[in-house]
Image (cartoon, rainbow, N blue to C red; front, side, top):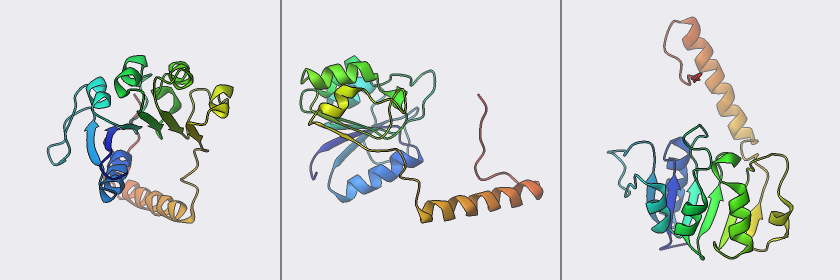
Length: 174
């Protein structure tokens, strides 16, 4: 992986953790996020197509909303190119799955790593038959460490709530 150009789409908490791990492997990291982050040393691309055209692999970590639905479109995949890899660890609908399947089958991108799908639990049968695709269930959070962290967060939020203090993890209802 050393020396590979990896674009991260969504440099929030998960994207930042992904970047930390990739940096240890000597990857050249760049990113796209809602805003440029002044404290981040990686190159920022305000346009996802530009990010893809300057990446060997595109890791999708952003949240799903109206603006990010199918953000990895036919044009983004074309910019990634025939050797490019799409890795989606965010939400299935961030990637235009029909276009992804078409691009993979026709060799327009090099491969994909997916643990989320647009119409879960239904996985397109074409993805199951391709040698250049890795599929896994979206359950990395199911570890004793993550359950302990969630437990601590719940207790901290309850304590903050009943003490009239700001919550540690606020859920916004858009």
